[in-house]
Image (tube, rainbow over all chains, first blue to last red):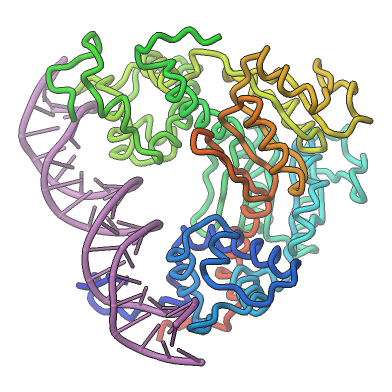
Length: 235
Length: 235
DNA sequence: CATTGTGAAGTGATTCACAGCA
DNA sequence: TGCTGTGAATCACTTCACAATG
């Protein structure tokens, strides 16, 4: 990488493979993993970067560059061994171990997440569902029952939970977030339309359904020429 | 910027402002909109780029640069008029008009999306729920009832639907996608864990819950040093 | 050979830093 | 004076293009 010049004079020693995987690459590893799994399911044993790239929806140079951050797992003139590469990526992401997840806020979305099979199929085990509404506590969803938010500490500690999912209304999100952090959760997936603040050691990712629609609306508007002074007349 | 001498009254000489908004900026406009709404709700009438930036969770230089793509809506030495800027951003995104949305696949997630109030509160009206499972057709969810996928053409045409949401299993996603496109939908939000191909004129965005968790797991693993047996010391 | 792995070039986004203006 | 709007500098990511190699 072009880190030429060197900043803080000294630490220039590039430990690329271990520390320096670009975020953009990290975000694509699960996509590659899924593509490899699909190939493996179709009994494909070897794939070139081009095959894989098509299967993952990226271009092959990007794919090769991405993989190069992990190590050299390909064979020149041949390609990649599908199962071997799949294992390596799974290991890199951390899917060779199980992860315990708690979901807080068991409304419509929380329900859906609790039942979402896509979590379980990777190594994510939903170990608890929490809600602050005491009327809901005890209710069962799938094979879990809803616990009180007050049990959070106990649940996180005893279940080695490191990932929390927030599916509460926006108004409750920061409080829930603080409690998750206090209980020891250090990665959070937030579905509430709210900006959350967390200490540095906590990772947070946000999924905002209404923002996604708004981004689509922006482009849709451009397409139909509704904005710019072109005669509108939708409909 | 090209606004030299050109204000809003003039014609569309400002090619850049209208056409060239960077994707990264577009993705943040809804965030700014939300921050402005929150400020407005607290009766804040004026905000500096710094205020706004804090409220939106970005830095102020980025916010100012983003806003500069839309036009010149601030006042030097003062800041931005909250309601005025809010309107301008809403207009830019296309939220000054309503958008009809159909949701296909009324399983757990589809249900949750159908009931999600965050859509309606912006200008998104869910006008139809579709499912290919005939046993489900007729069932009611909120104040809508589930229609057959076969009615898609009719629904899209009569309701001027331009946005479709796919919440089906992965195996059905491409077929549903093709049917949406054939019916005239030109923006798609895909929740199915599948790579969809669409013609150029169709915009597609993907929300993948399991990928989000995997990205968190990657970082979580690094934090706990679970993987590589990295010796903490940099050497 | 075919295909990987990677420097180098290219593109896009972010941040800096300050001129220009209310 | 205080803050916006924006060129210039920097940083991050992507793509090119080809030497290295099983």
